[in-house]
Image 1 (cartoon, helix red, strand yellow):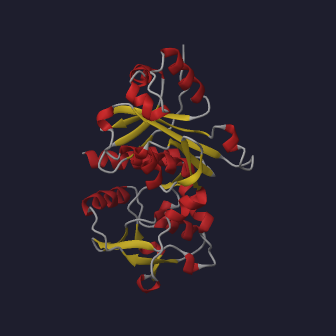
Image 2 (tube, rainbow, N blue to C red):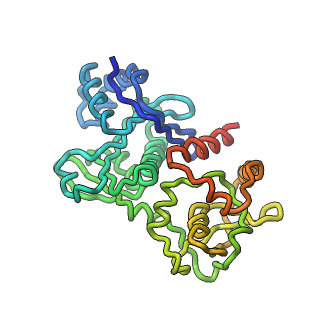
Image 3 (cartoon, one colour):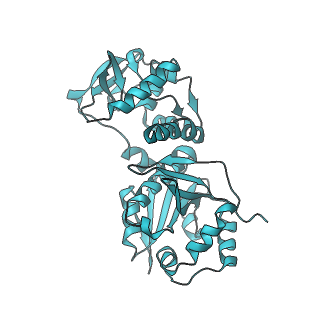
Length: 316
């Protein structure tokens, strides 16, 4: 009998750890039984240290997986917990918004206690935030945390969430799509900006996320070049290499711009990784953002085609 309704989305990320969020399925039930039988794990998840029965596990994950993206958390090849991107509950919070808005909630449980306090929660919540806004076009995200759970509170705060309301025991955190977009803007002083032809910019990635492009277009005004976030560049093997900003460069090209504002990227970067990226681009004839405009893919495919490939390259 099938308990957990699965899906087809896998997310890739991590900063120092290889984190993969895989679709939760029935094969993960033995681990869910184990984690939900640990009073410490249950306490930090639900505020009580009463282990869940098998029937309770079936009920929780059977119901939630019908409407949520439920993921198994894999770190460096080890399954350590689970997390969700779910429709917002309780209903009274969702009812505070316009009925046409997409309101979601993030939940997580790290069941393997040796992985606590290692920054993994912050990273995986960041991955879910990225997927919610770029992949699912979510309007508002919430996280609900017991007030005594300082670790989880810091996880949401580090990802830009702010306190929305408090009750006697819980804190409701919130992050809107506008706040998410603003946190990722790249404003640079006018003294450092200069114009550069789009066709002379060498990309360092192979695909553009349709969702990321949609969010860039929420702030991009083709008639207001001063509000455009400039593209960071470096000199590399005789070319001008884009170290970031591929999505907005493509947006500018599609809007009919011939040149974009750029600035010299002074950060210390792993140029060996960029060398591999440029090699890949050469093999697939991607020599400017004009070529990238032909490789716009749905966000879940961007995860598989680009982020997964980058992770595998780092691990080699």
